Length: 372
Image (cartoon, rainbow, N blue to C red; front, side):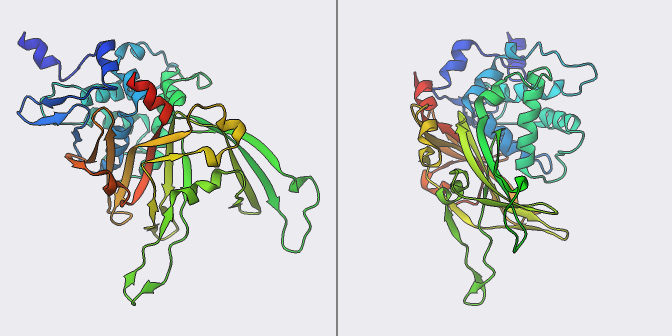
């Protein structure tokens, strides 16, 4: 009946077979206004300054375990939270957004994230707003941890689809550096090792050069992503300064996540302004983590290669720039450039020319499994 047709785009439902079929079949859909779109690839309204949220939401909706979990409302319709918790709407609105994005029968070829954004403002106690440009990295960190917290009913030691998908583990080896001219004697200078988990890895760019070429054209430096990943090879020592001491730390990855998130540290903030490092990071569409982990760790996995799924870019100045994302629709083997309402097809070689900021990779053995 017409009543069912009108309700479907607002609250779409999916059978378990329909959810699983999205792994290997793609559909070009026609919206009720006559425009066509690839199922799962639609623009999101930018209400004022929420492009930094849109790129994260769009990317997470394309991570297979996250998509499959949230397309099935039964997975999160009966969450119990402690009395007084304000977090319940976050999971419900995110689920609504995932279902709208993958809906093959939408009114238009773009959707509004307004309800989800309102839930973010409330649940983050206005830390993240859609009227003021923000940074997608702290937003991503908050969103992943908040979804996990809510899905587990605030029992954060329990697992959730978020931690199952993105969490890896590492050991941090740290040693205190003695002041100049002093020997490293005593307990305080011994190396300590601490195990910790991570949801993403931060990559540090080399400092921007201060010199110019021909007097006016800045040289934009380039660095391979492999160089940045050496931070986690358990050999490189990274300096960390506190207000009264300096430490050297080595990072040893002990468990690879199913989906690996890399965050490239482009912005530095001092008392006066935010500075952007324009270094171009050269990266392949696929790369192997084996050279950055011990063989005792890599032997646990049938495959340590990762394939790029989403590449979030920043274009422009630190305070007035815009965010967009390159998304891979694996079922169609097609790349798309998505910036708010604008969706265009993209050649893979164009992706590596961008000022990449956040990347999401899928471990290759998972891609093989999902084809079955």
